Image (cartoon, one colour):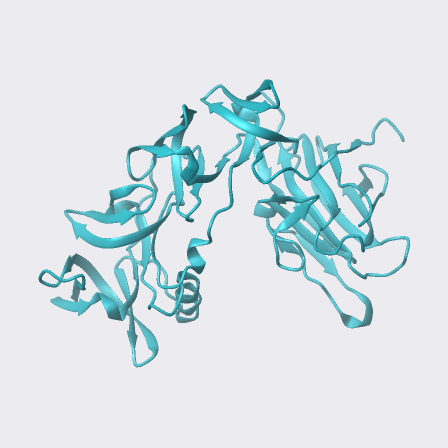
Length: 404
């Protein structure tokens, strides 16, 4: 292989026991063991009788356990913040420009009204995801006024005005919402409201360092986080400092300076086709089948799900020095699958074609892309010439800027 070609290495992705915790780094390396501690300098991981220190700035994801999908819980109200929080809420109140509520992870909590994007309040038979889809059809969005999304005779309607209060009716658990509409203060039963969308607010000044996800599905944006003696100390963006039990935490995602998830970018060009006019569209942060990205028993949070034939191009304008990913045939179709992966920079091969089959180990790819303005990912038909089960995952696909 010419020297200009990037390094391709086979990465042994062994299936680990359910109790193992997983750490992923900015350059797509993965480690398993037990996380002993985390501070702003290092993450200490124990594997067997040995401890290893991983520089914290290199860590992108830490997985402890599985988490529920908060947006798919039937009847669960959820508060969404500008910093990316997803709080499961009950006993909701509005008091002196603060939302107050009870959360399974944080207990009784309050957040400033100015930090909130929306509160979704699904009916007992629906989910927040259902409400969001209905709001999208209704074209509900933040404006200069607050918006109540009200259910009436099976349909939703937007009512714009100013949110004044959320309080219980007498001593009951029922809530009433006070809202100023057309220059008049009015009261509406919270049971008929599916969402409260707050007026647009100026961007916050806090620098988010990452997001912690609880086993129950709550997402908490933070500015700092440490783990010591089975307890997380978390400086949250919206709700102050919290101490959290280790067993309640499912995962942590750190925002890595200088790294960009490929899935967060919009392609500048897409070509997709298959046999018999059948096309499998590419997916972001999911396999092409719509399920999670899974290689050798490991689930990846970010990446691309691709299928033969596809060619996706990104305009990256020479901003990055390295492209990294873990490539393989998704577990859901293995041992089937036979595809060819080609990666090009400005129309030229960055490496030899990479042959992927459902019988082979996933491959860790690290390529030098310094100066590359256009990055193209091509998945072609493999040696069998067919598109059967060609579910190619580019897991943890990232663009990395050079250290300054």
